[in-house]
Length: 374
Image 1 (cartoon, helix red, strand yellow):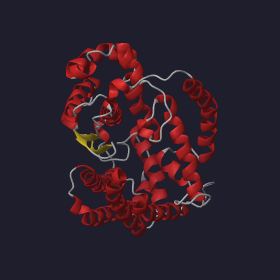
Image 2 (spheres, rainbow, N blue to C red; image 1 turned 60 degrees about the horizontal axis):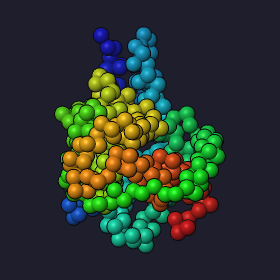
Image 3 (cartoon, rainbow, N blue to C red; image 1 turned 180 degrees about the horizontal axis):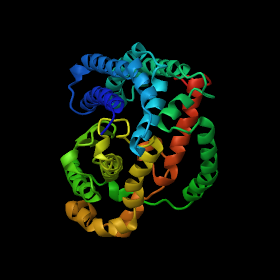
Image 4 (tube, rainbow, N blue to C red; image 1 turned 90 degrees about the vertical axis):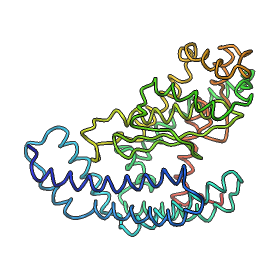
């Protein structure tokens, strides 16, 4: 039978989780179905829930329960204590008022971005991004032990990694990738014209659903909706949702976004249901999460074997566009390598270069070498 200390701790942690997940639900709605007029109130609501969840988590009672949790702990409970102690010691450095202020700002910024992005209106976003950078620097300042301000963010998502270790990995990757991209760019280009022939959005979405169901995505514990920028979100072990988007002039956009987000969701749906409501009920790191999403998107979704099986169904779904396109032509089109400006549209070879550039830019933004205007 579970001891009283552990039971009390888990009860408190579940309440924190429930508050946070209600906040995530509001964020999902904001990104999918919320009317434009709801933006100001949504920012206020998300700020409140973020503050309440943070206040509950940094309650000194949680610290006392962690100190008292000892004795003959199971492997799972020992892991829970280690993880929560690490999270708690980080969280108590951050004031709840700051959390609320930042939550409200980020919600307002997202609302503005949904209008500014299609209009390519950087002037509208610039003051909001400058304030985001200010919040980021303030957050990093709560962790003065970090060698670089970005370490405060890396530690949160990929515990044990630092800017130094990431830079070392990226240097090795860059040394191999840049010559590879140059060599491919010097060769005759592969045509991706078969992907540009005008594909109904509804038909694209309908084609992707049985594929991710075959991958193992459980629609009894999930759903897919449209959004501006695809993401996965989780409200409980029984409710893991994904989003996608489509472009009629790019067959790959919806399909590979769907496969990618389904990869994230498969990872989350596969977690032990006994962890529901506790910090153990999530992927172990951002890095591992991306390994799962990109495994299904690329190692499976762009493989010759997968399309040998799937391409006849795609031709049946789009006979006008694909009847004269061979499997080999299609396979080459979806694996075309070409430098681009948008990370989520990037091919396997250039994708990691986008991440490296973003890493370099964010380090320079945080330490002041670069400004938002730059």
